Amino acid sequence: EVQLVESGGGLVQPGGSLRLSCAASGFIFSSFDMSWVRQAPGKGLEWVSTLIGSSGDTYYADSVKGRFTISRDNSKNTLYLQMTSLRAEDAAVYYCSKGSAIDYSGQGTLVTVSS
Amino acid sequence: DVVMTQSPLSLPVTLGQPASISCRSSQSLVHSGGTTYLNWFLQRPGQSPRRLIYMVSHRDSGVPDRFSGSGSGTDFTLKISRVETEDVGVYYCMQATHWPRTFGQGTKVEIK
Image (cartoon, rainbow over all chains, first blue to last red; front, top):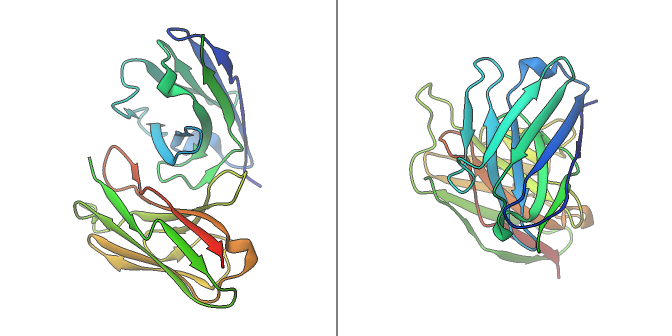
Protein backbone atom coordinates (compact mmCIF):
# COMPACT_ATOMS: atom_id res chain seq x y z
CA GLU A 1 0.00 0.00 0.00
CA VAL A 2 1.35 3.40 -0.99
CA GLN A 3 1.92 5.72 1.95
CA LEU A 4 3.15 9.30 1.89
CA VAL A 5 3.60 11.07 5.22
CA GLU A 6 4.44 14.76 5.18
CA SER A 7 6.05 16.63 8.06
CA GLY A 8 7.85 19.88 8.76
CA GLY A 9 5.00 22.34 8.45
CA GLY A 10 4.38 25.05 10.99
CA LEU A 11 4.32 28.77 11.65
CA VAL A 12 7.06 30.86 10.07
CA GLN A 13 7.55 34.60 9.74
CA PRO A 14 7.54 36.29 6.34
CA GLY A 15 11.00 36.00 4.86
CA GLY A 16 11.72 32.86 6.83
CA SER A 17 12.56 29.32 5.74
CA LEU A 18 11.09 25.89 6.27
CA ARG A 19 11.92 22.40 5.05
CA LEU A 20 9.14 19.94 4.40
CA SER A 21 9.74 16.19 4.33
CA CYS A 22 7.74 13.35 2.87
CA ALA A 23 8.38 9.77 3.95
CA ALA A 24 7.35 7.32 1.26
CA SER A 25 6.61 3.61 1.47
CA GLY A 26 4.78 0.90 -0.41
CA PHE A 27 6.49 1.46 -3.76
CA ILE A 28 9.96 1.67 -5.27
CA PHE A 29 10.59 5.31 -4.39
CA SER A 30 13.71 5.78 -6.48
CA SER A 31 11.86 4.75 -9.66
CA PHE A 32 9.19 7.42 -9.53
CA ASP A 33 8.84 11.10 -10.22
CA MET A 34 7.66 12.94 -7.12
CA SER A 35 5.79 16.19 -6.74
CA TRP A 36 4.51 18.79 -4.31
CA VAL A 37 1.04 20.32 -4.64
CA ARG A 38 -0.41 22.97 -2.34
CA GLN A 39 -3.78 24.33 -1.37
CA ALA A 40 -4.23 27.73 0.22
CA PRO A 41 -7.07 27.99 2.77
CA GLY A 42 -10.41 27.84 0.97
CA LYS A 43 -8.74 27.75 -2.44
CA GLY A 44 -8.09 25.22 -5.17
CA LEU A 45 -5.14 22.97 -5.89
CA GLU A 46 -1.86 24.41 -7.17
CA TRP A 47 1.04 22.38 -8.51
CA VAL A 48 4.32 23.50 -6.94
CA SER A 49 7.18 21.31 -8.13
CA THR A 50 8.19 17.96 -9.61
CA LEU A 51 11.44 16.02 -9.49
CA ILE A 52 11.91 13.53 -12.30
CA GLY A 53 13.13 10.21 -10.95
CA SER A 54 15.10 9.02 -13.96
CA SER A 55 16.97 12.22 -14.78
CA GLY A 56 16.88 14.33 -11.64
CA ASP A 57 15.37 17.17 -13.64
CA THR A 58 13.28 19.58 -11.61
CA TYR A 59 10.32 21.77 -12.51
CA TYR A 60 8.81 24.63 -10.52
CA ALA A 61 5.76 26.86 -10.63
CA ASP A 62 6.73 30.43 -11.46
CA SER A 63 5.33 31.51 -8.09
CA VAL A 64 8.06 29.58 -6.22
CA LYS A 65 10.93 29.47 -8.71
CA GLY A 66 14.17 30.66 -7.15
CA ARG A 67 12.80 30.33 -3.62
CA PHE A 68 11.85 26.64 -3.31
CA THR A 69 14.05 23.61 -3.95
CA ILE A 70 12.80 20.07 -4.37
CA SER A 71 15.14 17.18 -3.59
CA ARG A 72 15.11 13.56 -2.55
CA ASP A 73 17.14 11.02 -0.62
CA ASN A 74 16.50 7.63 -2.20
CA SER A 75 18.37 5.87 0.59
CA LYS A 76 15.78 7.21 3.04
CA ASN A 77 12.77 7.07 0.69
CA THR A 78 12.21 10.72 1.48
CA LEU A 79 11.23 13.74 -0.59
CA TYR A 80 11.98 17.28 0.53
CA LEU A 81 10.87 20.79 -0.22
CA GLN A 82 13.19 23.53 0.99
CA MET A 83 11.26 26.78 1.15
CA THR A 84 13.00 30.14 1.60
CA SER A 85 11.94 33.78 1.47
CA LEU A 86 8.45 32.70 2.46
CA ARG A 87 5.57 35.04 1.74
CA ALA A 88 2.04 35.28 3.10
CA GLU A 89 0.75 33.80 -0.16
CA ASP A 90 2.79 30.63 0.43
CA ALA A 91 0.55 29.71 3.36
CA ALA A 92 -1.17 26.46 2.44
CA VAL A 93 -1.48 22.77 3.04
CA TYR A 94 1.37 21.14 1.15
CA TYR A 95 0.74 17.69 -0.28
CA CYS A 96 3.46 15.27 -1.28
CA SER A 97 2.44 13.32 -4.37
CA LYS A 98 3.67 10.28 -6.24
CA GLY A 99 4.28 10.85 -9.91
CA SER A 100 4.33 13.91 -12.13
CA ALA A 101 0.64 13.31 -12.81
CA ILE A 102 -0.21 13.22 -9.08
CA ASP A 103 -1.07 9.51 -8.87
CA TYR A 104 -1.46 9.57 -5.10
CA SER A 105 -1.18 12.24 -2.40
CA GLY A 106 -0.44 12.25 1.29
CA GLN A 107 -2.54 13.91 3.97
CA GLY A 108 -0.60 17.14 3.80
CA THR A 109 1.25 19.45 6.18
CA LEU A 110 0.11 22.97 7.01
CA VAL A 111 2.42 25.94 6.48
CA THR A 112 1.40 29.23 8.05
CA VAL A 113 3.29 32.41 7.17
CA SER A 114 2.60 35.23 9.60
CA SER A 115 4.38 37.69 11.84
CA ASP B 1 0.72 28.24 -19.18
CA VAL B 2 -2.21 25.99 -20.07
CA VAL B 3 -5.42 27.34 -18.56
CA MET B 4 -7.93 24.73 -17.44
CA THR B 5 -11.54 25.91 -17.28
CA GLN B 6 -14.19 23.83 -15.53
CA SER B 7 -17.95 24.18 -15.67
CA PRO B 8 -20.10 24.37 -13.78
CA LEU B 9 -18.32 25.54 -10.64
CA SER B 10 -21.23 24.39 -8.49
CA LEU B 11 -23.36 21.33 -9.20
CA PRO B 12 -26.32 20.42 -7.00
CA VAL B 13 -27.38 16.86 -7.81
CA THR B 14 -30.11 14.45 -6.81
CA LEU B 15 -29.06 11.10 -5.37
CA GLY B 16 -29.25 8.41 -8.01
CA GLN B 17 -29.22 10.88 -10.88
CA PRO B 18 -26.38 11.44 -13.35
CA ALA B 19 -23.93 14.33 -13.19
CA SER B 20 -21.47 15.77 -15.68
CA ILE B 21 -18.52 18.17 -15.36
CA SER B 22 -16.76 19.82 -18.27
CA CYS B 23 -13.09 20.75 -18.46
CA ARG B 24 -11.59 22.73 -21.30
CA SER B 25 -7.91 23.49 -21.86
CA SER B 26 -6.45 26.56 -23.56
CA GLN B 27 -4.29 24.36 -25.78
CA SER B 28 -4.23 20.75 -26.90
CA LEU B 29 -3.29 18.20 -24.25
CA VAL B 30 -2.03 15.67 -26.77
CA HIS B 31 1.59 14.94 -25.87
CA SER B 32 4.22 14.62 -28.57
CA GLY B 33 4.11 10.88 -27.99
CA GLY B 34 0.41 10.80 -28.80
CA THR B 35 -0.94 10.31 -25.26
CA THR B 36 -3.30 12.80 -23.64
CA TYR B 37 -2.51 13.42 -19.98
CA LEU B 38 -5.75 14.67 -18.47
CA ASN B 39 -6.62 13.62 -14.94
CA TRP B 40 -9.64 14.01 -12.68
CA PHE B 41 -9.50 14.26 -8.90
CA LEU B 42 -12.04 14.26 -6.09
CA GLN B 43 -11.34 16.07 -2.85
CA ARG B 44 -13.88 15.14 -0.21
CA PRO B 45 -14.40 17.59 2.68
CA GLY B 46 -11.38 17.55 4.99
CA GLN B 47 -9.44 15.08 2.87
CA SER B 48 -6.55 15.17 0.46
CA PRO B 49 -7.26 14.94 -3.27
CA ARG B 50 -7.70 11.48 -4.72
CA ARG B 51 -7.13 10.76 -8.38
CA LEU B 52 -10.11 9.11 -10.06
CA ILE B 53 -9.24 9.15 -13.74
CA TYR B 54 -5.94 9.37 -15.62
CA MET B 55 -5.14 9.74 -19.32
CA VAL B 56 -8.69 10.98 -20.02
CA SER B 57 -10.59 7.76 -19.44
CA HIS B 58 -8.64 5.26 -17.30
CA ARG B 59 -10.11 4.68 -13.85
CA ASP B 60 -7.71 4.38 -10.95
CA SER B 61 -7.75 1.23 -8.83
CA GLY B 62 -10.78 1.07 -6.55
CA VAL B 63 -12.72 3.80 -8.36
CA PRO B 64 -16.35 2.75 -8.92
CA ASP B 65 -17.39 2.21 -12.52
CA ARG B 66 -20.10 4.85 -12.20
CA PHE B 67 -17.28 7.32 -12.88
CA SER B 68 -16.21 7.74 -16.48
CA GLY B 69 -14.00 10.16 -18.35
CA SER B 70 -14.06 11.11 -21.99
CA GLY B 71 -12.86 13.73 -24.43
CA SER B 72 -9.96 14.66 -26.64
CA GLY B 73 -7.77 17.57 -27.60
CA THR B 74 -9.02 20.45 -25.49
CA ASP B 75 -12.46 19.29 -24.41
CA PHE B 76 -13.03 16.75 -21.64
CA THR B 77 -15.88 15.46 -19.48
CA LEU B 78 -16.26 13.58 -16.23
CA LYS B 79 -19.55 11.75 -15.80
CA ILE B 80 -21.09 10.10 -12.78
CA SER B 81 -23.83 7.72 -13.89
CA ARG B 82 -25.71 7.68 -10.57
CA VAL B 83 -24.58 10.04 -7.83
CA GLU B 84 -24.11 8.60 -4.35
CA THR B 85 -23.61 10.37 -1.03
CA GLU B 86 -19.88 9.60 -1.00
CA ASP B 87 -19.43 11.48 -4.29
CA VAL B 88 -19.88 14.84 -2.56
CA GLY B 89 -16.82 17.08 -2.72
CA VAL B 90 -14.81 19.19 -5.12
CA TYR B 91 -13.74 17.76 -8.46
CA TYR B 92 -10.65 19.03 -10.25
CA CYS B 93 -9.26 18.37 -13.69
CA MET B 94 -5.52 18.64 -14.17
CA GLN B 95 -3.32 18.51 -17.25
CA ALA B 96 -0.04 16.61 -17.05
CA THR B 97 1.04 17.10 -20.66
CA HIS B 98 2.73 20.48 -20.35
CA TRP B 99 4.90 22.25 -17.79
CA PRO B 100 3.79 23.76 -15.52
CA ARG B 101 1.07 21.33 -14.49
CA THR B 102 -2.21 23.18 -14.08
CA PHE B 103 -5.53 22.47 -12.39
CA GLY B 104 -9.03 23.63 -13.11
CA GLN B 105 -10.77 25.87 -10.56
CA GLY B 106 -12.75 22.99 -9.11
CA THR B 107 -16.42 21.98 -9.28
CA LYS B 108 -18.27 21.61 -6.00
CA VAL B 109 -20.76 18.74 -6.09
CA GLU B 110 -23.42 18.68 -3.41
CA ILE B 111 -26.66 16.80 -2.87
CA LYS B 112 -29.87 18.73 -3.42
